[in-house]
Image (cartoon, rainbow, N blue to C red; front, top):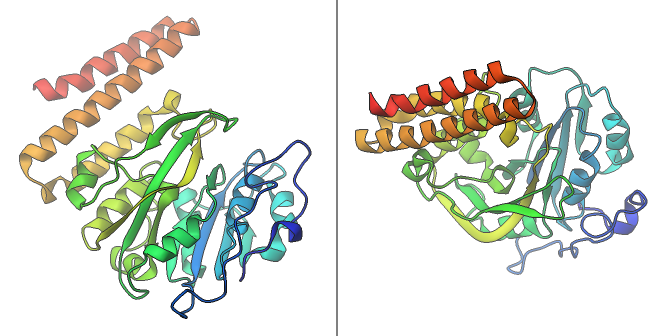
Length: 318
């Protein structure tokens, strides 16, 4: 499907302006400069009860001006008005469904099973692609049938998206970089070929926080990484997000279990250093939780958090 123009889409809600409400990416010509076709790009958006943000996500994909887009939305049976928003744009969707699923990983995997693109990626329903992101990714693709992971930079913005909190600018270049935790892939700015997914396999559905990190580890053991020194997306930080800093402990603990399953692929010294970083992050997350408990007058849970923080750091001294 060719991306629609701004004039073809429903009008934005009152008060909304800029990208992707009143701005659009210039439409690309049907063929690339060398005369070849643009590779089909399949984007999957998993969603559940994200009526506040999903329309912005949808528009950021549809207004890419890309000549061959396959856009799939897998809603988990939302109880808010998300489905009404999806229906506003269903004419430009390749497929969408709203039904109970087994979680985010399952929703993404369903979309990938239906995808037919050469390049694949997923965009959560509170994140946004920046203008020309898809054209940039397609331009960096070495060859359509090559298994490769393509990664660009990204921003983390506050809930109003008016302030940038941080920037992902250290992107892994190897499997070891990915494992080390000293560089990280910003998920909405990561794309990969269907051949790479065939080699690595689909997302693990038993993971709820670190399924992307585990996929990057698994994939970078088999395929090369192509780095793009541009910002391709931004992620919104808000209190309902699974990875919100105030609720970081479960994700960090699950991430360490993922690291343990891959630690035999790296030297022992690297594994030790990585686990020290993981423990430091968990300790800080427990301290943050404890401070939140103190602010809420919950002294008992504050003491529990302090104990857990000390226990995590003790691993590195034992």
